[in-house]
Structures are given as structure tokens and as C-alpha cells.
Image 1 (cartoon, rainbow, N blue to C red):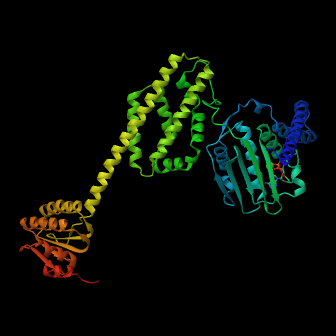
Image 2: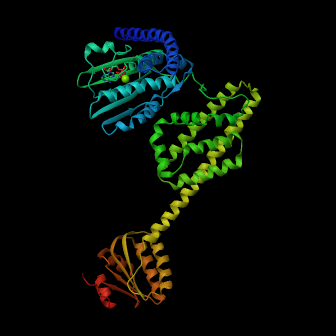
Image 3: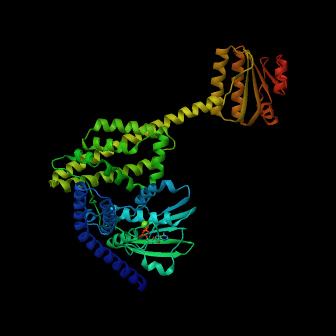
Length: 515
Ligand code: ADP
Ligand code: MG
């Protein structure tokens, strides 16, 4: 429901927009004769140089620049720009990169909610407008400060607010904002906001400004949201040359492909960067590669590629499989958008039959990719889990040599049947290879042993003694001793028990010297 306030805003904006339009019209008429004058001045300068001519030229250049600025407000050439789908969060993100040199003094707080929604508009124009707003915000802040950017939807409208903790604007001046040449800066042109107002107005948007002197300013932009339902395939602003094939079309629009793809997954941006730095995977390069393989229907290579990628993702625990899936789905959507735009621009009208054949072929190939990716991913993940387990098993049986024939095995933690088996294998193997004569098994760190395991352990010890090795068990805790008694476990002359590790070492003639 448009309130009175809104109405006033709109009329204010349309007034400003038409002021801009008229100014631009005049500028256009005046600029041409001035350019001619400049040419004649240059000719004169060649014939008979004079310092006055230099001054005249410099002043003329100033005037032409001013007119050019004015013209930019409703620049004719930007009208040629095709409206496209725009994700404002992605655009704002890329604009902020241009202010990198300022972040040491201005903190940026971004809150990009509902980043997946889009609006329809002229991308470059909107970017320029937001650039002006951000530039003003940075300029309004003297020294340290904060700029907050909030993107969200409410009542099917897209909101962007940009707040700064800058100097603010006096109340009575707020209505002047957007008037061409209105500036309070010594180097200002007063063209920025005029351009912003006319651009936002052309996009059926609204601007609300709140400001308090000494506190800061908030610009609120409100746009109609692009309705996802009535969209289907998307009309994109892409390059085309006559007679190129689909692959040529992809090559020609490489940058656009990347841009659209990144826009689709704008909320993955940080993860994608991480994947590139941590995992060393250039997803964009891979996307181009896959697109080429799919278009050419090179199935064996698709399989090969999928397997490699699957392995890669399995090897990097930071690479989340959900991210991959989301990325792949975005890739698939953009691929189809591109195919649609190719047919649109090339004017080729597919027969229904041919279209379905192509559709079938491409989707099958994409499915093949996905299937092989996941098979390879899970195979490698399983294998890695297995080797991890083996490594842990190995680490959990730490056989430490004290002398060439005396080894010690300190057991820690809980011993279950799996671990008992690992101990058995490693112990017997080591006794054989190292010709161990005495093995001290210190159990003071064992937290829990169940009866099954106790039985198993002593079977192992009997095995040890058959190999000519004496086993000395130290640190048997009361509960474990109890279990042994209950089970009627007997020790033979090659299995000894000692109260402490110290005693066992002394028995063997080994001393622990305190340092
Ligand atoms: P310029 O930046 O060249 O001065 P603009 O049209 O971009 O021209 O802005 C016009 C004027 O509006 C500025 O000179 C400034 O006084 C005021 N203004 C715009 N944005 C802000 C802001 N974020 N905080 C305070 N003042 C602002
Ligand atoms: Mg400005």
C-alpha cells in the first residue's frame, strides 16, 4: 500500500530524474559546439602559439568534463545495455573490492540475507550507482568509522541499506540531494547522487534517506523483486558471432559463464575461495572443462574427469560434499541457460525432435558425471578411513626399544577386541624381527578391560613365551587382577608380573636415572 510518504518520495525522485534528463539534454547540445571550438583553438595554437590559448584550452577542457559528467547521468549509451537478472549481493561484494585501500580505517559490516533473490536491471548502471553511494559513504567518514550494508527481502521487495557513521546531512539539505551540481566537497562534482536517483528511478526503485548530523547517514534502496515463477529460462546478455557453434559460443562467453555461475552460488562465495586456497581446486576452470566435455559428448573423458574430481574432494576434508552438489546444480542451470541463449541468438529453430535428443544426451552425460564423481568420492573416502584406522591401530601399540633386546609396551586407554587383535599382530611380528628377549607390558594406563579381552591378552602372552620371550606385566590394577583370578588365568615361568615399571626395570638390571 503506497503511503503518502512514498508518493512524495516518488514525485521527488521523478522530479530529480527529469532535472537530470533536461540537464543532460542541454549538455548534449552545448558539448558539440564546444568540442568544435576546442578543435579550432588547437589549430590556432599550431599557427601562432600563445599562452592565452593554453589557458583557454584548459578552461574549455574543464567545461567539457563537466558537461560529460552531466551527460553521464542519463547517458544515452547505457540505454543500449540490456536488462538482465542481477544479484545485488554479488555486485555489492565486487564493488567493495574497489575500496580495499580504505579498510584499514573503515570497518565493513555485511549482512547479506536472501542473497539468492534477484532483480531485473541494467547491471553496469546499477553498479555505477552503488559505487557512488559507497564512495560517498567512505568520503563522509573522517578517520575511523563503519559502513553497514544490509540486503534482505520484505513483502516481496528487495531492500538494500547502506549506513555510514559519517558526518551526516543537515535536515534542510536532504531534499537537495540528487540535484545536479549540489556538492559540499571542495573537489566534488555533485553528479554522483543525481546519477543514483535517475538510475534507481529507471529501475522502478525507491530511495529513502535518513541522516543525523555528526552521527551518520542511511540510504535505503527498495526494488521490486524478480519473481522466480514467471522466468523459466533466462535471457542473458551474451556475446554472439554469426556461424559459431555451441562450443564457440561458450568460448566467447567464458567470462560471462563464470560470472553467472558465481552469482548462482553467491552464498558459497567464501567456501569457494577456501576451496581454491586450501584445496587448490579451481572450480571455475573445472566448470569450463566439464562444459566442453558435455557439449562435445565426450563420455569417456567425462568419466575420467569425474573420477579425478571425486578423488580430489575425498582427499580434502575441508571440501564439503554438499557444496559440491550445490555447485554442480548451479552449473547445470547455467549450462541450460546458455544453451537457451545460444539458440535464441543464433536464431536456430530446433525441431522438437532434435531438441529432445540434445536435451537427453546432455542430461545423461551430466548424470554420468555425477554418478562417477560420487562413486569415486565414496571409494576414496572409505579407503582413507581404512588407512586412518590402520594408522591409529599402529599408534595404539607403541613398542619402544630400551636396549637391543628389551622392549616396553605401555598400554593406554580402553582395550577392546579390535585393539587386542592389533596388539597381537604387531607384538608377535616385532618379537620375531627384533629378537626381543624381554617385553615389559605396562598396564597402569589401561582404563578398562573386559573379561573377553583379558582372556585374549593372556593367550597372546602365552604365544609370546613360546617364542622365547619373557613377558613382564607391570601395573596390573586391582580390578584387572580380580578378573584374572576369576578367570583362573595361570602364569607360566615366562610370564611374570611386577608391581611397578620401576621394579621390572631393576629386575632386568636397567636403571632409570632421575635428571
Ligand atoms: P559529490 O560526492 O561529488 O559531492 P554527490 O552527488 O555524490 O556529489 O553527493 C552530493 C552531496 O551529498 C555531497 O557533497 C555530500 O554533501 C552529500 N552526501 C552524499 N552522500 C552522503 C553521505 N553518505 N553522508 C553525508 N553526506 C553525503
Ligand atoms: Mg559522490
